[in-house]
Length: 118
Length: 430
Ligand SMILES: C[S@@+](CC[C@H](N)C(=O)[O-])C[C@H]1O[C@@H](n2cnc3c(N)ncnc32)[C@H](O)[C@@H]1O
Image (cartoon, rainbow over all chains, first blue to last red; front, side, top):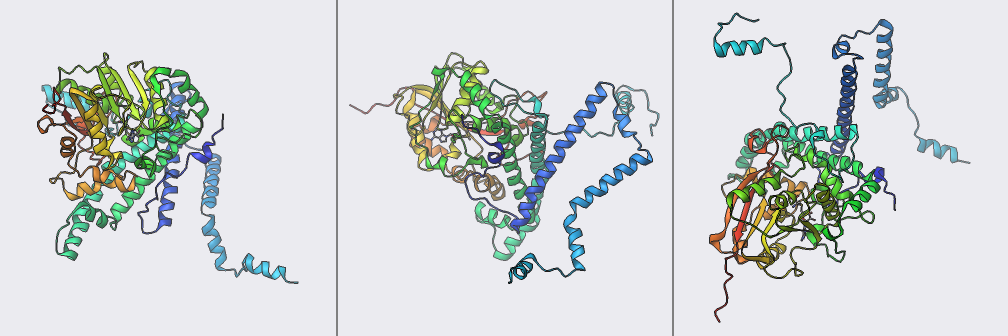
């Protein structure tokens, strides 16, 4: 039996030219990407909710334990560090824009030409 | 603060309730968890996160219809309509003008962009679920199906109105077979319809068929059909309730899409419904059945996926195939009658142009009665009714009671147009 590749096929395009509604098709592309990020956040949130409820049902912890949790200094620092790294990763492009303000780099196209010269 | 209350009957009750442990939770009013959907023998397996995805998408659709749609209506009222009147010194002349004006309105643009994105995301979510287990699903379907309950005819030609565009953005539509014996297209339709309707169709997504069966029994209590035909039956969501309502009858469910029929036959078998045969064919030509073969012919949400040239042929076939005194029923969203505001018509047309339902717009403007009469049905036999999905109200939201939501064109409430063939077919004077 032929194997179907869900990774390739799940997101296949439906026949029929796609309409775009926003003034910029690129904005609409980003909106589509964002919708799925929003979806996956809901999925993660639902999974955590399941875990918390199961832990509560089994008496491992209660919802109040979670609400009342106060990290120690070391724990808070570790979490803060994670959040910093996370934000830095997400906004890499803006960091690079900032760095570019004070540099005057050549493009790889330019360097390529230069390096190809005999 | 709790003020002391007089200890009188009703007041006391109210105060007792208000002294219950304070809960900051608002009253929940939304789709049930996906896990309430009924599972039959060929239903895809769904992981925790796949279910969470459908839950999210059901909420997304509900948000679009209950929260954002009213914004579109408001923007039409305060911006789109006044500015059109000002610029043109006249009101809108039809729904198409309204829709084209709406295309420049940001509320409409964002609502539309999100609605389209949500539909495409729903398709991807459903296809992921079904394609990752394609081999297992196809094997399960094949094992369940009774040979004599599934009549495939691969020579069936696909009508242009089916092949031209993938209806409701469903890649591959009803007919594409990715491998031999494929049912994944149908399984995707089944596994994700909850997300599009927010659970409005009930346990087996068959609330529409249940409503129709109930309507028939109430409206025509003496009807005892022996042979029933379903046109464009799909995977049989709305076939089985009718077959179950008339267990003495033999039912024939015709569709052009083989995956729908395979899945439908397997689903029927596993749900214990054994009086339906799923037949591949084009319902505009059912010449394999002789004249006067059926007592009842039914179509549900089918006509809007055909065409102007196909409809008269289909209606003629139903007339030919009905026994004298036989009944035909077509179930669809309401027609655009002249009393329906152009704005509502334009919003109902959204699915036509932006959700790949191109015949939806024309189909809803024509005079169905006239089509029925031209096919031979006497004018005085025409009947009209309204039905709303029948679901278990303890578990599922009820369309009939849902005033919050007017999901133009997608609400789980429909119109019925019917007609009867004269009891004794008129004979030409000899
Ligand atoms: C929107 S679905 C409705 C399915 C079903 N009646 C229900 O209520 O769930 C329309 C179905 O009509 C089928 N169809 C379209 N044109 C057809 C034709 N000419 N003959 C038979 N089936 C057709 C499609 O394959 C599709 O399954």
